[in-house]
Amino acid sequence: MVAETELNFVLIPLLAASHIIPMVDMAKLLAGRGVTVTLAMTPLNAIRFTAVIDRVIGSGLLIRVLELQFPAKEVGLPEGCESADLLPALAFRRNFFAAIDMLQDQAEILLEQMKPKPSCIICDTHIAWTAETADKFQIPRIIFDGMSCFTQLCMHNLYVMKDKNEIPESGPFVIPDLPDRIEVSKGQLPGVFNPGKHCIQDIRDKIRAAETRAYGVVINTFEELEQRYVDEFRKLRNGRVWCIGPLSLCNNDNLDKAQRGNKTSVDKEDSLNKWLDSWQPESVVYACLGSLGRITIVQFVELALGLEESGCPFILVIKTGEGQAPIEDWVSKNRFEKRTKERGLLIRGWAPQVLILSHPAIGGFLTHCGWNSTLEGITANVPMITWPLFSEQFLNERFLVHVLKTGVSVGCQGVMHLGEEEKPEVQVNKEEVTKAIKKVMNKEKEGNDRRERAKEVGQIAKKAIENDGSSHLSLILLIKEIQEFQLNKS
Ligand code: UDP
Image (cartoon, rainbow, N blue to C red; front, side, top):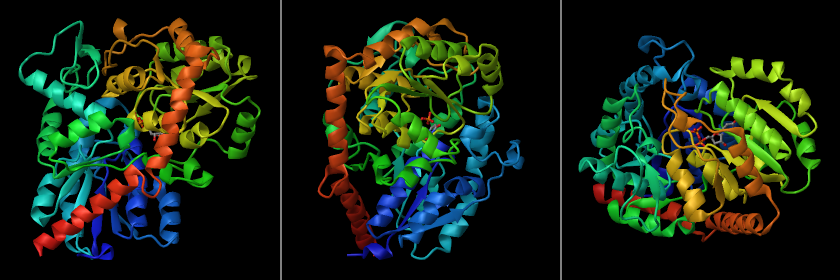
């Protein structure tokens, strides 16, 4: 058997904070099992993660950074724009993917020189060229796309429907062949089934083609969370599915939690902690719509007023960059920050989300249902208020509301496509926001039962990563699989 120390797992994340975050966690877990991990990054992304990575390296784990130069200028992106969450506008996605494609040659030259030789590639699904690279190096390519097995299975069955032209243009329909009854409408589906005006279908097709060729899939989930979906998805992928999450749980000290993903915008974590300490357990609503989503000013106002009218203490994260100016304008003209200062806290930029969610004062998480956030909420034992925006987020919402039954929807009816943000189905009003918050935060039977369920599943999540837990065992099996592959090759 090839020794762990001779294995080199090459991790290639998509350059976006929310895709790099779980890969860095994965790198820590793998390196913790004694394998060498090579993490591909570009200089500015590496800076965002330096503190975390340096601490891991300092602790003696074998993580190396493979630095690739990002050709921003060559593809017409502003200098320094190396991450999807920093794009000046979503319309630049095509340029961004062109730059991602250009990283292949550099990466292959560096991989060629590497010692120990690469044993496998774990890459983000969106980096299609890694399929060719893995073929060249004759190593397995394992994909990671940050989705649950529930969503993977929904997507698979939706592809079957799409190929037969069976997705209804309008109205709700049930996704076939799932363990639960899951109803959606076309307008709520990811772009591949529900293209907007500015869709990048050709890029998606290329990604899909590379995805089907992958050796296996790693999933940021734990088996007990969605066992029936894990079993079904495993059948589809010849058994090569490894559930190794919740990845966020590998950050067990406050510094790691606070510095996860980016430099936090909260200058003094002490003051944030003091603020949270001043509230009763399970009384505060934390509202954050992820790193990629851009909410319109109209929707921000409904969110802010809905939070205010709920009467609950709240933290509201305002993403910096495109779209922030009109929001700040409204906040200042309406004295929103001043008038809610007794019980509201605005965080501008990057919030230390995992740290906040782990505080006992948090009683509800208003989320856009990105899978990282969804799983972080599950892991933190909190019920959720769901406001999906795009991508597979409506499917994650269905999982929380209809399968796990720890979520309450604000009632958004459609994906917010680029350039179509004003469509009526995308709109949510403050009354709906307030109603969903109150439903989650109330201390009556329905709210208490939901809270109990959230606590139970949160406890199971923590057990999954302990020694002998399901995710821990899955990680060991993944390493064993690569060891055996190497053995058979030699
Ligand atoms: N995140 C954070 N602070 C923020 C915004 C986001 O720490 O202010 C983290 C969050 O904890 C999660 C990730 O960024 O790990 C967002 O990923 P998700 O899949 O939920 O959504 P996306 O950003 O891809 O839409």
